[in-house]
Image 1 (cartoon, one colour):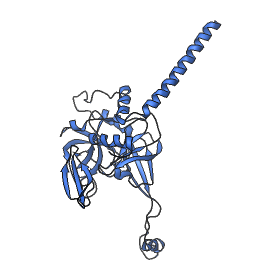
Image 2 (tube, helix red, strand yellow):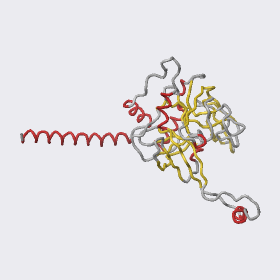
Image 3 (tube, helix red, strand yellow):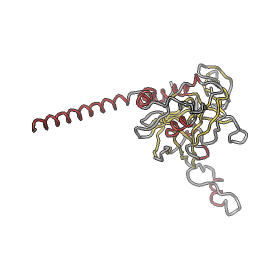
Image 4 (cartoon, helix red, strand yellow):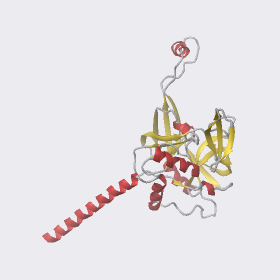
Length: 310
């Protein structure tokens, strides 16, 4: 009996040592994996549901919504209050006394959306959501709160990669934006007007749109690239790349706060990062635009590896 107990104890210790060694190797390997490799490992262990058609034969958007919503986060950014001129200081002191409107005091705040793309906390969003922010606060769909750091940004595509210290997070699977077809159903998931975890549906209205919003200042000319339309600025004969656009256009409702959120197909695969609207009022008028994920992957992989786009 004593010999049997010793055998059991030896087996238990051997198993524990093997498991510990495996975890060390796994963590070391994971730290060297690219974002796409992390996605492959995650979805090998967590495959997406195969069916997106209901029992009545209709396209079923509930499966995609359920898969994606947990991995779309609410981003709240804080900016320093800028009171630079003497006039601003006088208004702050005497504005109400003379019937003027007192300017807002303290730090300024804004909000947007982001998409978790790796289980260890990498999040993609728009550059304009986090640009020049003093503090970036993340709230996940299950109401956990984190402070994020910026890994890198690319104003030329309006993309940013940020990270939170967390593990085992739900993520959205990369799709293939080149395979997207005009007329297919899509979902936009984000936080418009601070209404967290909002899902809207529509179709792909057009592809390859260049709408002139990225790097639009001092625009001189346009060139075509394999990724889309690049606006080019020239100074003293030198060419400066100022923006690449090849937007997926959709009529899924996108509003302020949706920036950086997910555009997904009916399988729940990420095909674009919601970025802009065309509107005379500042709110949804039927035209939304998303950065195609195939362009975003190239940018994000460079940022994750080098801190900037190569």
